[in-house]
Image (cartoon, rainbow, N blue to C red; front, side, top):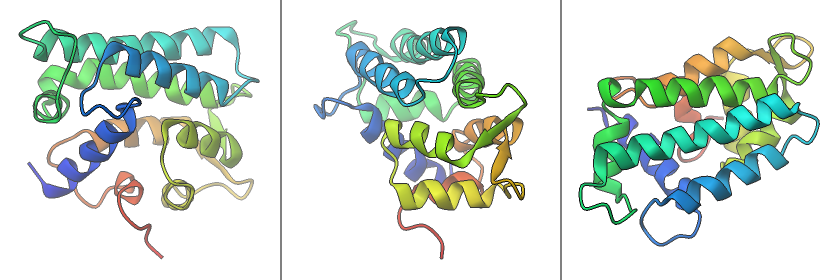
Length: 177
């Protein structure tokens, strides 16, 4: 496992621990889902419902894989063991990636506008400078849009334990200048 991968998931764990108690719980994912769908009021209801379902799948995958004592909590070490294991987490992260990018594709043309991307990523909790650095790393069009497929692939790469030098690294630490 690469240090970059560990740093990426450490950040996401912190952001998803919405109540800040050091554990992930079902309520954290419900709160996060609410924040994310509120970030794009213009999205259609199908996309919003899919996003809520994806957050629930993310949580149920973690709980099923890791919550051996069934206390409804997943700690950081447990989280890392699951999300950085493609064989255990690929389905959940793919559903999440497809749902998040569909939510951002407001025109249904396969492209995401920078303001929509920024709104979604800010709702998750990423820093704005990092969000823009990531968007720029995707090579936006002249109209300042990125391909939905590019973003979805980057989300899947973000959770891959052996990936280094990927756009998602822009979200961790200070953005590249």
